[in-house]
Length: 516
Ligand SMILES: Cc1cc2nc3c(=O)[nH]c(=O)nc-3n(C[C@H](O)[C@H](O)[C@H](O)COP(=O)(O)OP(=O)(O)OC[C@H]3O[C@@H](n4cnc5c(N)ncnc54)[C@H](O)[C@@H]3O)c2cc1C
Image (cartoon, rainbow, N blue to C red; front, side):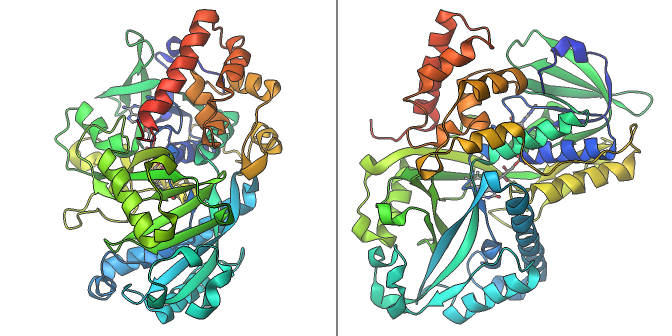
């Protein structure tokens, strides 16, 4: 997946141009290449740098979809809502099996618990029923190993002795949940497979606009994000807008008076060091707004989230704000008062924008995953995706490629795709140390520098190696890593120093622990 010079693409014809290389764009590119569509996929930043790198990492079993917003009546009174929930639940269970079995290097199993309080909208019997439904809807393997402890039996669950109001707990559900260990690498591996099958991928390449040609194809104007004077045009028979939270912005860039399709739903996390007995245990509980509060183990720390707030501003550079950090600290302390966590326990924070399907009737959008055909808005053969989470990206990739297949026939023969991780990921996986932390080797870093288009240290430490998700976010080894990358990336001494400083500044700006 070496980076093609932008000029080498000028004037080239593709069946499909995919705008946005998050997990869904990458999955679409892989499926399109496998079906024989000549494909160009571009991203204005690094691959998988958007929402895909800011998630809670849950390859969750679908329980979330069975918890309505405020009350169970939402399911009874709104059949569409119920149908969407059942479709999403089934899709989650299918994806859970598929991804955990084909990519064991990038997923792992953990125990999750769910305390049931008397004021929660779900009684223990309803929780039993929800897990029975999961079993009916999904494949039986890998098993959920669901067990419900009565209030007086739950001492073996590490969180239980920290929970508030023990006399109000009616039971504790315990089940097996899979977690993604840095989904960005899944996106990169998916893209590597797409390029193996002939797709062209280029990061730091911004979509600017489209112009319709007399033969009903599109001229697509692209700009080098690292050198804005560098601009080219490629031609496409169809354009897929998979730009996540930016997808309405892409329509605006076309001067299109299009209806709103995406709701940018902001979610923030605080990342905490919790007592050692919690390690590799996760928790799902209801917060005081009657929404899920997750406590997700990750490399010896826990991600605690989520607030969910519609976001109106520009989608770039989203960070966890002071009030969000305080709110999350307040919720985790309310749930587990004995923890008494403070700002000093926050190792770092992060925030992202979920590209939810806009629905004027739902303040938090619809949970449906939707492919919008923009023909009615004057753009024939332009499709936009909204609402795709990470866990169902493979199905979304197939759905997008099938939607393309209904409109065009591929110009090349089909090929067989691979659902497995790349050789580089296998090697990275072999370096794992305590708490699944990733180490580096000179050989792996040099291969990544040459083959995977990194432009800076954040590209390598976050998306390519996942070292930035280790406890120290790679601060302690960034200089050594920069020295190794300097050769293949042609950095002289001054540039190497700047790149190190840029990485540390990036951590301070986007992942601040808010203690200063
Ligand atoms: C806080 C939070 C927690 C979440 N937790 C989970 C979870 O636990 N499990 C789960 O499955 N999902 C989770 N999600 C949802 C999931 O992260 C997203 O739905 C998913 O990553 C969306 O992927 P995408 O490819 O559609 O969008 P993105 O990953 O956002 O990718 C869109 C890409 O388009 C690019 N782009 C934008 N404009 C342009 C342009 N003009 N030219 C070129 N490129 C452009 C962007 O740079 C970006 O890389 C969470 C999301 C958030 C925010």
